[in-house]
Length: 239
Image 1 (cartoon, rainbow, N blue to C red):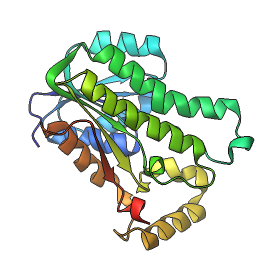
Image 2: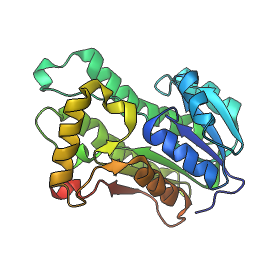
Image 3: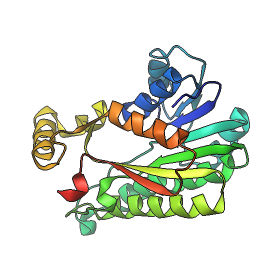
Image 4: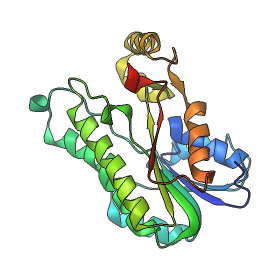
């Protein structure tokens, strides 16, 4: 899974899974473009890397920013986006703003990235997006999460046909201990959620950023993998 001499863009590289992917790609020899909304978190990621890199601030849900970003970065080989925005609760109680943020992260951002980056990607390159197991296993209060993840997976498959031979894949994680993403729950609630998931999932644990980074490098470097949703969820869909 070597990426020696390849340029890899990681959108969402400032923390969590995106940070793990960026570090893994760098260790595999890639020139990594760290992209995300907060320069300080991107710089923190860069301090954990030794290979060639660039830091570029980007809000991928804003088309004008994506267009300018792609123009500045130029030709590249692989793009990974882990951009996400959580929204939970019964649909009747959700405000438009929270729904709109979820759509922007999981639908508009991938659309803009593919639209403006596809003319600059190498013919043997790839796009990898992150959906989530709620596309396959909805629960009470996950209607919008299920919708945007399912939409992203459908978009990925459609674009794999449209952009061939450029490859597009999606990775569908389960519950992953990705650091600060879970801080909003508080330590006690987070540990309860992790313990419950580990008790029910066939893998008997929650995921790690290393699990998802390894899957992402596989998706990027396997030349016969396209239009596929990789479930890296510890068996969550079987729970």
